[in-house]
Structure formats: structure tokens, C-alpha cells
Image 1: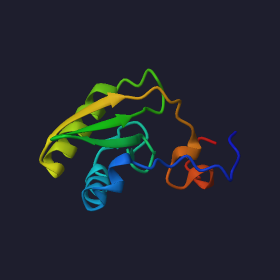
Image 2: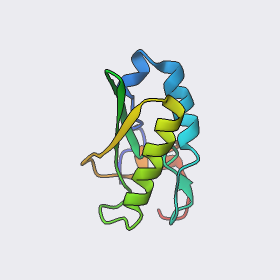
Image 3: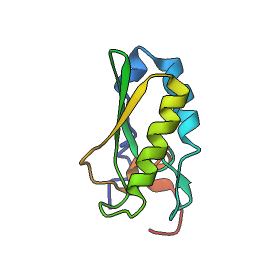
Image 4: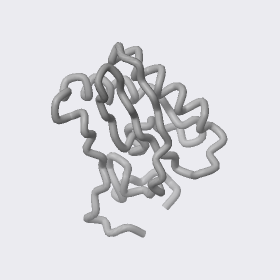
Length: 115
């Protein structure tokens, strides 16, 4: 179990120059839920980075398990929602970080029944 003082919440690169857009994106992505867990991708900490590259956005995303059967649908939902909100071409790329409970908004303080 991770150290309870460890916080793995992501700091998106795009927040440096596009803070308002990132806040809007974060709010919009709360509508994309993991169907098995019933929690959104922001709450779970699955969106690890957002990077503006010229006239497009790259989102780096992880999953709670590497063999998530909902991965393609969740990644497409994130891509579509981000593209709709930001108004620019958006790509979602799978990051290779392993997810753990400390990546959640409430980190290891969360009580959602699995630990």
C-alpha cells in the first residue's frame, strides 16, 4: 500500500499556459465514467497529462487495470469530450504508469470498498 502522505495527482503541462481551458476540460471529463467502478476518470486520476502541441491536444491516460475491457470506449469518450470542449483536434495516448489508489482525488483516504 502506498505511503498515505504520497500524492500522485497529476499536474498537467497545459495548465501552465491554458489554465482556464484545463479547468473546463477537467469539469467536462467528470462526465466520463468507468462503467465497472461508477467513478469518473478525473476522480480516479486516470488523466495523467494534457499537452497542447500547436493546434492540437495530447491527453495521456492510464487505466485502473491493464486489461480493462472498457479501455477503447473510455479512451474514445475522453477524446470526444475533450475535442468538443477544447475545439481542437485531440488524441488520447495510453500511458504506461501503473494505477494505484493514491492517484485518486482523495488518494488513499478514499473509502470506496476495494481496500
